[in-house]
Image (tube, rainbow, N blue to C red):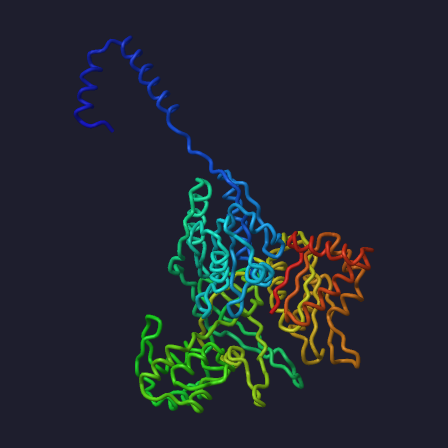
Length: 559
């Protein structure tokens, strides 16, 4: 819009022009506009080479790194994308621009796919003085060593002489916005060829996860009488649920009431007294019941305790109640310091064993009550024991943990599922999803446990699916029902020819359950089947398996 003065002047001129003069003026103005557009600089495409790597456990790092690679190529950069377990380590010192997206696993460890890279930069110590790099660390702030693997990589690359393109970015479970901002900053520096000066990491910035409040609808022990196990099928209802088959839910358990009461007595404090912990106020009872880990404390927490009470305490894992008995605190100040030195209860993840297509507004999990010996005493896992004691109508908080690395394929693709014990959980959700959406692909399930009579989890459901066609095939192995122990890998070998035929025809293979020894034994058997049925050498069989992994057709969720 013209200013009023200019508009009046224009109207004054136009009113005095003839028709021919107006036509000439129209052409003149059009020419001015055309020439001005030509002279405007076009937005330049970025230039430069960029390597994007990822280290992932559940697929988040791979997903976001792949998206970044696509965006960077569209902006004109030459991009190489690689998983850290396939990245050629000798290339690192030769890279022009290097970005890595890495998650944190377990006790602050890098994911298994990144361990070779992690060892290389910490042990081989290459000269990275010519490297420009940036690190995106994915993590979960509910864990005490939040984004520790990413922190370690960022620090070590700088120690080896690398120059940060942009500061380390830590992201919580809702990482999309922060990750994209970090990537755009990094790519702009790379593409414009800006000189990089060493810069320090910025403070953590992250958004919290969505917490659901659910109600226990049902809890059933799936094991029969005489079983050495307790495995509970738990059904939970909640509003606005959103998850996919292959996802898990994270649950923060409560500490046992009796243990909390004993600790409060040993601390000699009022359970209703309020204290500040990480910017929030809690009563001591609430803090010790719902927030703080008090059992089987890690060595780093025990070391903090030793400093507070000024005692020489062995660096071993021990319960808080035992520390308080053996090395009691002196005075309120030490009590407060002890509480501040404790860490939050870490969430426990349970594979979802239901499909929203079959159970709208519900999520189901399959929980084995963990039983183990500690100092000669039978103990139970904190979360599995907590869940096993919940009654119907109990309220429970949880969040959905997405697993992009363990997704169903297209509906017309065949799948082979191998899930002994509670590894069966996600495959219940897989089959429910495929049946309720009318998927055309065939479904083959391998299940194993100790005894047919007492440990056949979801037995009647699987038998019904076999009858109705929801399961094309099912093979079971019960290790203790005969003198010779038989496991799922033995059943795979008995059906080796058909197993390999399914894979050759494009089937997707899924393994869920214990990492050791189950998943290792299954993989060895898989290689044997490929070698024998495919008439390949050992090296060719490994290449074949690597190709399945590269194609996303061999997927594991093991623990």
